[in-house]
Image: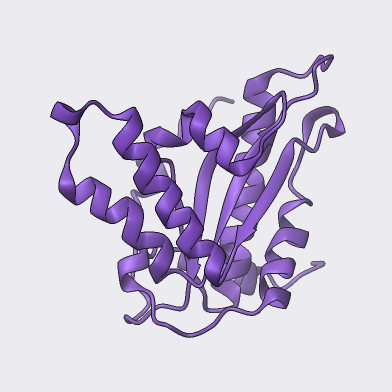
Length: 194
């Protein structure tokens, strides 16, 4: 065996979503984030499109992200559909995080690879990030707020043609005990054909 399978399995099974409200104020260092990103780019990618780009928010930039999310929510969502608690979450969560990484889908104009394939590659990249965070004891949460699809949010992120944000990846050391998890047994989810 090339690797310690029990350690690999333990990290995969220990990965949990931990929300910003559950983060402590402990600082996350740039080197830790660089390790996450370096592992992200080793995700499988059809046709080697490597369709990911990352924008990292830390320190004062988290306040900028918070303000942008709030402002865009208020301008994009009709007044009668605005929910104070949703606005509050959008604005408070970046300030609770040690870092937030905007996950960007970067599509080449003349690619023969489908958008579904590129999105699958990005999903694998985010899983690599999440597993790396787990191994470091850092909590993570992949958020996909509807306003990230807005043109104003793209402008805030300074995205170019063929780019769009597919999520915000919140990072922070947990202030809670690491959550336990459970899954359905594979017998309920798998069909074998021979």
